[in-house]
Length: 480
Image (cartoon, rainbow, N blue to C red; front, side, top):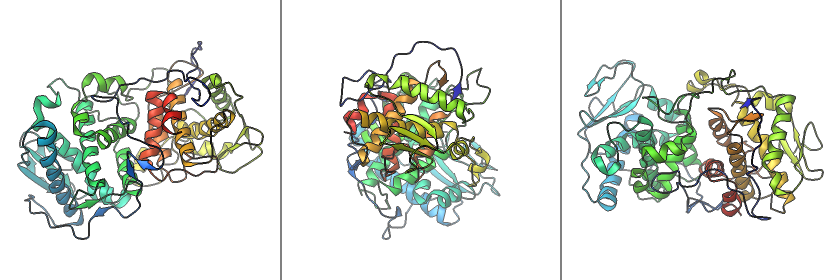
């Protein structure tokens, strides 16, 4: 976040529907052909599917794929990738005729390579030192790095993280096959094509979650959490412009697209156009005056600015906002706790300052400790405890799973409130820092007053994003 800046009168945008009509916040209808993910029904389900817990990956009785892969080495990652390609082709063999009225044609060639040693050629050039997976339209091929990329993803996030990368790349093959039906032209920005591909991957994973795959199974809790964590890792660097030729999207943007496909299917994905994607895209360069590149120091001064921002954002709720104190009367959910007895938020300034340290991207990519999660992760944790006080003040529940999702949603609506000039305002990369926190097992952003949070990272991320894009009204309606 960025402290300081020109102060101006702001319209308070947040309230709780349990008490009064909710002011408009965010923008509706900024998804693909519709308004994006909508099937969420609270903590009891994931996009209308039951919350499930089991080991995700290849089924024990999965068949051996009978497709040719050039240069395959038979490694565990090759097996995962080959099964993923065969599986996703089966999925599109069903969906293209059903959704778009055309028959599906398999890709012409598949290539496995080791970026550390191989120099194989594709229609898009050599794979030498290329730590990547990609679709090449020139020769209608899909290729993947079995030497570095896939092992890293599998070891850190589990086997389904390999699958989502291949499903994404195959999404580009589907774009190539759909042509005009995907609405893409030579002038379509890269980030729009990437949004569609992420969305197509989400549609495939819905099919897997419904147990229609002969190769894979994925739980809607831990399994989808692995997928979301992998998509977070491969986000663009904070400060990237969505207009850049190589832009793929922030974690916020990429998870939006994946979830839209998971909930609405391929037609929603093909409806993602330059106009409606750019209307909601959060990827942008740092502001010229942002000397900290999106990270402010977490200290007494910025906590005072945070309190001021929260007070103004929630003032139309008509209840007293909690005081924020270092230490405080209770420590039930450190490093930030809501204390119902005296309507206060007790914080551990030192621990939150540590959480607020910038993410070390190089360490993160190596699987090492990234240091911190960024200033907005710390601000969001405190904001979530503050939001519990507002909810208690208007008579809403604060001690169940839906309370946690409602809280994350209100944090998202508050983030949208700060996305304008003011004493404390949103910066490039802040929303990704909130997602990084949400995907942690100990995150407070989607936790109730006792620190309990929904098992599904899918739901946790979506609740924050819905508040940001749709405003506070959806928080109480969706997570009653």
